[in-house]
Length: 262
Image (cartoon, rainbow, N blue to C red; front, side, top):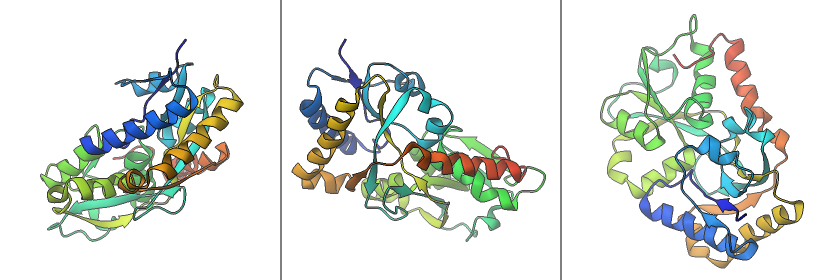
């Protein structure tokens, strides 16, 4: 049975999607040339497949049960504002002409989020807002957009007032879509947490997992220009418990009686 792979999380533009595809192809050539690069809509099912050789997920679904099916391969270290080593945070954005200059000032505003299972767009924003919520509410309205780019457009087009955007996505968006991001401004950052991990099925052997780590570093160092475009500095090998901080953010919001973004 041939193994499968995909890097779906940071395809912010067609050019970036092509670079991520090329990086993955280089890794697979070094580890298992017969593996197929695929596209899937149902990522939660895809990540749980026993033939998964390499992919990338969000830390929130990882700690909410995906960790039972996969093993950590590496965590990218990005060169982007809001990143610190293998940790990242979310930029809280509003429109350039909006009066709010802090998250506290956004009480009653319309919030956009990409998905409820997103650490950067939902969990981190909920954690940031929780200390200011009253009776489990802070925003006047919330809107699910399906992607960070969707949230950026919702705020820029005045369909929402505030959103939390993965700082790596924001850096990519500033490069690829300056007209869009030029209509927005940041008013703060969320708490940082480990970045989006690269994963493999637990059926992947220890030897092959090690080969994947070595191939990732080799693919990074052999094409410096591609690494620059992808803002990749290195790959960290974090222990699974490093991601417990994401669950802790959820727990702290629940203790503050703010279990959902509202």
